[in-house]
Image (cartoon, rainbow, N blue to C red; front, side, top):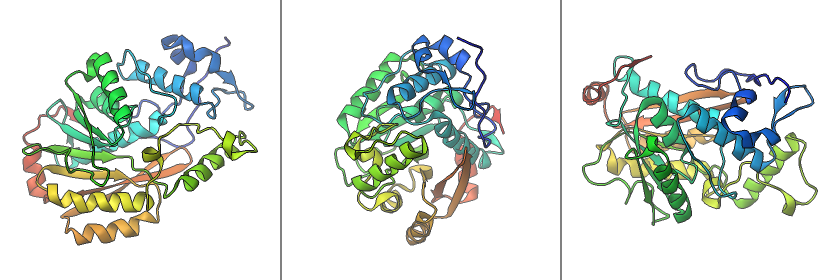
Length: 325
């Protein structure tokens, strides 16, 4: 194979994001030789993979997780979401900054920092990154029993996750925190990548648009391949992301003394007005909209808390941190 250069991101990721310089395929193929057959020069002369090929995307993710995040084994079924890791890492780093703001610009680190991942999925991306970067411990919930089984297998197969990730099946599809947050548990953060489409048709149209942009759109919708995979609950729900997150906000009021910051990704700018109204209804003490720039895409997450600034600082005093922003 010829000498491979990194593919440079068109916009900066978070300053601590390991993927700011793009994908260095020569290094990644040494870590995971199974990635090599998928790495080719594109029409611009850069080394890359076909991002419309789900197997290639999965191999790239596996290489990144093994090389950068201390994993020894990782695999998911072909029909589950296989997300782009740089953007997921950004969410974790910005969450760390959020905690640091309440802790004299020092990020709380270690297992005592407990995080709840709503919709952990089979891929367990957020717990992997959060554990490797900051030593946090996680509870991951999901309504799909297969996702929980696969997530549990990944946890058992990797020493870094042993004792640092509990996978809990949410058996009530109408609940988010209920049945998952147990009495006397306290979380520094919750995080969520909600299903942002309102229907299967909308999700399919989005996938077709992605494939068209990649020059890979098939003539028949039935032949359309989900380039990042995804189960129904991962991609869409009735009412879309604004309804899902609004329900999350409403339910968070029942657990306001058990979490420092509730958060969720928000894909659509137009969802923010709906969420702002809901946040006012439950009388949160403070809310934040934190933007994230990833390539040509502008993303964001919403964060809300029922603790005032002095209470948050006092809570953070219970957590030792040596990672200064």
